[in-house]
Image 1: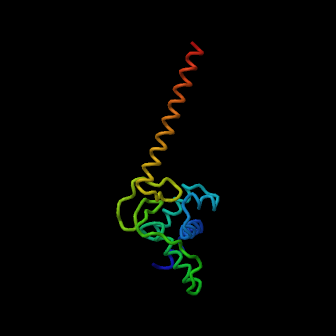
Image 2 (image 1 turned 180 degrees about the horizontal axis):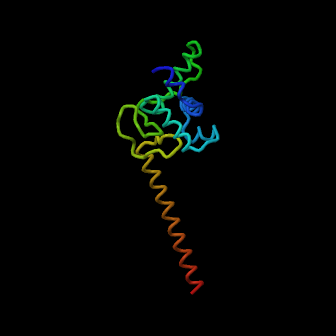
Image 3 (image 1 turned 45 degrees about the vertical axis):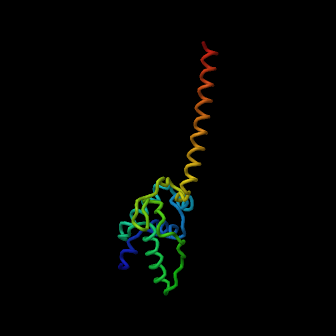
Length: 148
């Protein structure tokens, strides 16, 4: 990759990629840079496109290597370790090229719950939703009695 590719990146794109390299999610980067997560994702998508990378981690790695070569061979930022098979939080892509997990991440970190933990979490949500629905129905029934 030639130097003009890296020089064509905006300062905002570089800042976002460096924070991706530290293992931050779009939401964390947004808070850190006082941006919205959508703006962060826009910067990252633009940078990924300019660099011809397959995902944000690859783009962050390439930028870190370029930064290191610009500082006489010493890499300034250490990339966060990531499991090559874990999904990319931005694209839901897996490093191994497999399909995304059962539950797509919605901002924040990738869902790393096991299947049994997911079932228990879903049951909890269903139970709480059922209690809320019953409560609302009881309140409405009493309100109808009072106003009838």
